[in-house]
Amino acid sequence: MRILDIAYSNTGEPLLRISLVDSLSECGFRPLEAGDTHEAIEILKTAPHIEVVLTDVQMPGTIDGFGLAKWVRVNRPGLPVFVASGYTGKFDAASELGTGEQFFTKPYDISRMAALMKRAVDARRRETR
Image 1 (cartoon, rainbow, N blue to C red):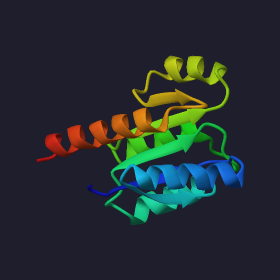
Image 2: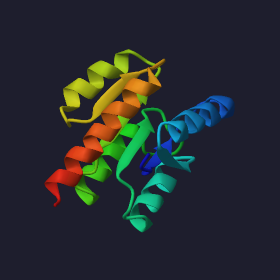
Image 3: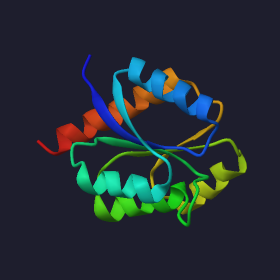
Image 4: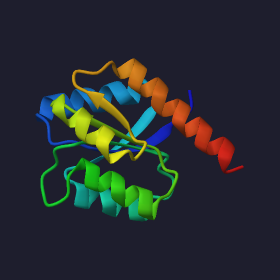
């Protein structure tokens, strides 16, 4: 199975974070973890091989997951971004932004999310050929 790099950032419980990283690895991803959006941005600046981003809406620091998605749109156009939140009300906020990011409410089906992320990466690869 091919390996896809993902910049993953999450404020969640450390055990949940480890579980998600393990699950993503089992699905063929190679997660790169970031503790906050500033760290995620630094990773994205120095790792052009990253093909997809998964972020939580609630992030420590001054920028939330939506802010990270905006940064990606400006600085890494076309890079797929997937946003997750445990707060169902954030789905409405994501819809209002109309930014095109995939939004998942927790708990989410990791297999479904992984399949959608792989599909987005495949589509981007076809576009950039």
